[in-house]
Length: 340
Image (cartoon, rainbow, N blue to C red):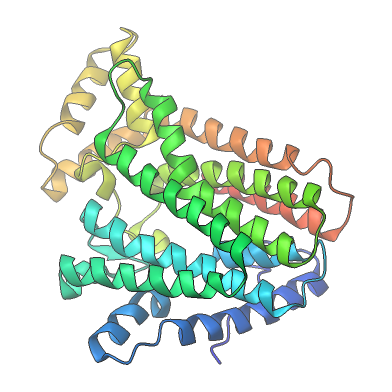
């Protein structure tokens, strides 16, 4: 069994030591099941499937499932299987995303497509989707329907990010919907399945799912900030990759709106032109990153992230006061601080 640290200093800043210890112990079981789930008889498939599992990560989705389960009876094996299923789904999307974004690094390690090529990375992502589906299928028809709807949103989010907003669409609103589909949908499902298989009432299940949905948007907006302000060593990803590949992020979209509305000055116009230009050299990329860091659009993105995190907390209002609700509130606050 591979030991993981308790979540007091990890993805969930739990001040409650008893709750932290319980979730930490269950995360060890999730980690063991996760590694068993990616085992393949074929040597190449096995090595490539383990690539991102071995690289680690926040394990945010399974931890959210386990935390939501604490609102009911967290002991059933189904809760652990739900946690494994959502993380397998997430890992599968990373293999595909890195191919589409040409990201060279993921979680501090070379991306799978950098090691084995695009075709192998895509096929391994498909294998992990298959393993995720098999895991979720063991939870029954309702769980399968939930995962299917989530998978559809994940694909639509990637599709809409790839093609961009249509004529007349607001680019910022389009981007928020992309984040909701690509990131928030799976966080909502993680919380939903955790609470559902812990036997929580329907009202509680819907409450934590709404929390996860808003938390996911906040999380990705915070990532947009961190992509410009943190080092590659801190984030485990290459800084500015989205900028280099001209993948939209909120700071760039806000800058684009500023210029389009005639409120930008010459420096803003010049920065936008640089962002739309050739960023293949490290020097050009570092220059636009530095200029965006100092721009007001970064602060505005931080404000948006904080607002979505606060919205997530408001979704918890119907829950009774207690250690689990307090932990969820603390996590949303920590996420907001992460962007500050």
